[in-house]
Amino acid sequence: MRGLGRQLVVEMWDCARRVDDPSRLRAALEEAVRRAGATLIDVQVHPFNPHGASGMALLAESHISFHTWPELGYVALDVFTCGERVEPERAVEVFRDLFSPRQVSVVEIRRGIRP
Image 1 (cartoon, rainbow, N blue to C red):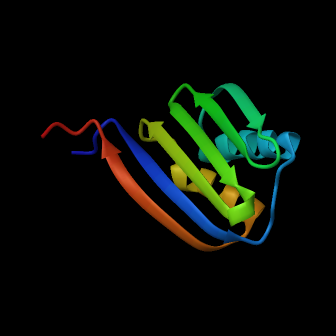
Image 2 (cartoon, rainbow, N blue to C red):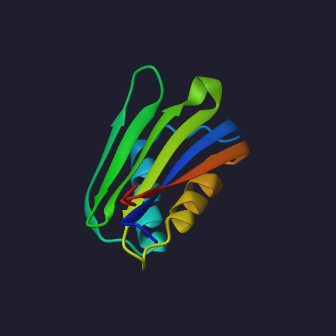
């Protein structure tokens, strides 16, 4: 059974690029939605002081969210999509390109599968 959706829980370590600019982060979320083939409802990005940011794209198919710890070179990314036409891996590529991590961990969770 395919289930209702797929959730990619992504950790990016040793990021070579530190990105704190909210407009660049917003653009990355919008590009991730486009590449994944999802439908954007809204985007929010919140920068923290002195560094780091959180962002979320609310999708018709669920969401893409991130939290950054630039002082640690770490990014936590969550891509949850429903339906069969959206490709969550394509969204992850956008953030790999943006942050250039040396190490990436991706755990896939199939959602909506009855036990």
